[in-house]
Amino acid sequence: MRSRPFRHGFEVGLEWIVILLMITLAVEVTAGVIFRYSGYSLVWYDEVASILLAWVTYYGAALAALKRSHIGVPELVRLLPPRLRLPLAVFAEACVFAFFILLAWIGYSVLEILAFDTLVSLPEVSVAYAQSVIPIGAVLFIIAEALALPETLNEARRP
Image 1 (tube, helix red, strand yellow):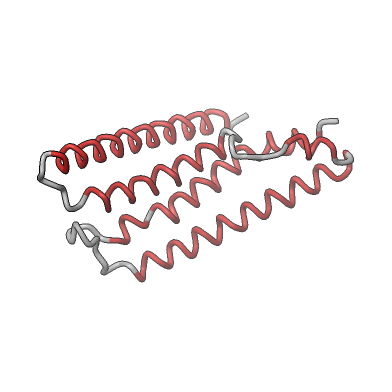
Image 2 (cartoon, rainbow, N blue to C red; image 1 turned 120 degrees about the vertical axis):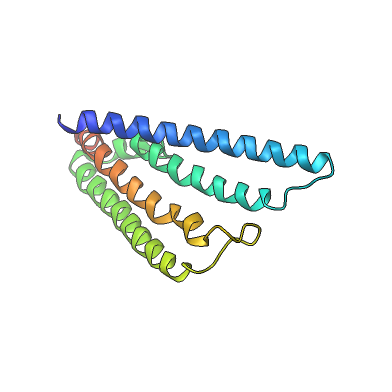
């Protein structure tokens, strides 16, 4: 019960971040197209657009995990014998947690390697800043999965 206000706040926060990132990406790409069409191409817009797309993807994936909106086959789980559903659900969730813990750890390690690299078109911006979405997104995904875990386990227990 205590996690509900936190879960709601986490969900609303992720929704706003995703919305802002999508608006920023749309405005940035539109500006890039307008400038290119007018003959004054922006040298940085392709690189920034690809980074923003990665950010939308990672933050959006965490939001989808919280809402349990990732592609799945719940009917396949329901077809399993009741005594296998819960252990398999726990195993699947453990695999997801293990993967994202590893991704967060490796993603953070990569940031240390990229600490002195900069973007090609914007040398003032560190590549580590652009790639920080990997460990941050992984941690957000872990939090989202943890908040959705009770619902997942309850579904696995249903007859």
